Amino acid sequence: MNQKVVEKLGFIMLFALTALTIFFLITIIYFIAVRGVKVISWEFLTQFPKDAMTKGGVAPAIVGTLCLTIGAILFALPLGVACAVYLCEYSPKSYIVNIIRMSINNLAGVPSVVFGLFGLAIFVKIFGFGVSILSGSLTLAVMVLPSIISTSQEALMAVPQSYREASLALGASHWQTIKKVVVPTALPGILTGIILGIGRVAGETAPILFTAGTFYMRSYPKSIFSETMALPYHIYALMTEGTRPDQQVRIAYGCALILLLIVLSVSAIAVVIRQSQRRLYVH
Amino acid sequence: MYTNNIKECMKFEDVNFYYYNKQALKNITFSVPENRITAIIGPSGCGKTTFIRLINRMNELIPGTRMEGKIFLNGKEIYTQDTDVVDIRRSVGMVFQKPNPFPKSIYENISYGLRINGIRDKSYIDAKVEESLKKAALWNEVKDRLHDNALGFSGGQQQRLCIARCLAVEPKVILFDEPCASLDPISTAKIEELMLDLKKNYTIIIVTHNMQQAARVSDFTAFFYLGSMVEIDLTSIIFTKPKQKATEDYITGRFG
Image (cartoon, rainbow over all chains, first blue to last red; front, side, top):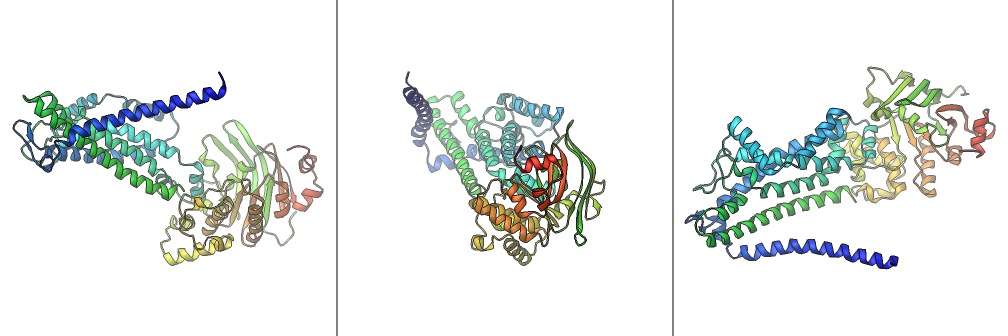
């Protein structure tokens, strides 16, 4: 075959595959939006569920998901970034450090339900936090740590060595160099990791199944030691429990749409921050 | 070699340097005069860059390296137990082969060295930024764009910014590691002119691949070959009647 034809075919194939991927994404969003938008109203956003989850709103689930997500990021962010900084900037090249790196990568592949069981055993039982927002947040934090660590690490490694040398050659200490040059330069990349992390944390069901979630609440969670409703868990409950599937499935789509919007808006905020940082650091 | 009115700034005594088991520098012994430009020339891989990175102790950042011998800066040994590396790096500035400004504004690049030293006085920093940029012959080009990102400037301007950044910390010695390797002839000429101006107040060591450059700017030239310092003398002598055969062969382009 002629080189030009091959090139053309290759291009068409790649374009078609890209289009297919986007098609799936759009279909999912369209499917959920069309069904979800019918049930979303002010009442749906602000009321408690009524009549055995067949009427009313999902306000406590929205609040619960926000609490769990914020809690998980509060724990995972400083821990993950600190760990990445240590592994990238301080740790000597040794056998043990290699094992730590490998373990972190493997941790990223552990199924989320296993993290749920881990959270039940450690946070709920041994630490005695009970089924609560605290236990759920910690479990989600542990689950999302490896991905925050590895994306932060990649961002730090992408900082040119010449920046570090320039800073050290001016008489800056190792820590000053990290704080004022390396981390600010890597920030857009680190933020990307956090955006992805937030998306995962907000949407995960299995880790909160045994550690934080409950089907129904009469009030908002009172403290970090209360159990809570959460959107993904509520969808699961609506689809598996109850006696009026026809009513419940409609509400589940509403929840799915809200969940999607929460994740998208968090991502959008982070993208804006990242872009402004990028303008600052990469011309 | 030196006439009476030249003072010694640095002295190297039997300096050996190793990357793991490979010896990169062999028994380097010579001294560097104050307020003069000393050029280090030699073929690629002869240890020029390794050598000047010893002076501000940058090679320590590379794992598996080892240094033997003594280096004196203004009479004080710099490789001892109680030497403060940070002090050494403050008095020995470095300009790298590729311009490496931080991805921050011109102003932040220059004030960086002051702020890490704990200087907070805004008016002092402002004055120092202006002074450094003027010394680096960059002020007129950037005075209205001090808060623009440094990465938006040309390579030659970035390199002069790096020189200004280095001057702001008031070093005594400035090391230039092939500072014009990635620059065009006009920027190169500006930097060479700048170096000649700076030698009044600073001791300068420049590593260069470009023999014309060494001949144009330096007072003394050292020829390095295979990790050894073959010969050092007045630049005029090195380029006209070197004592060593190897130096002559390199100068006349028989190898390199």
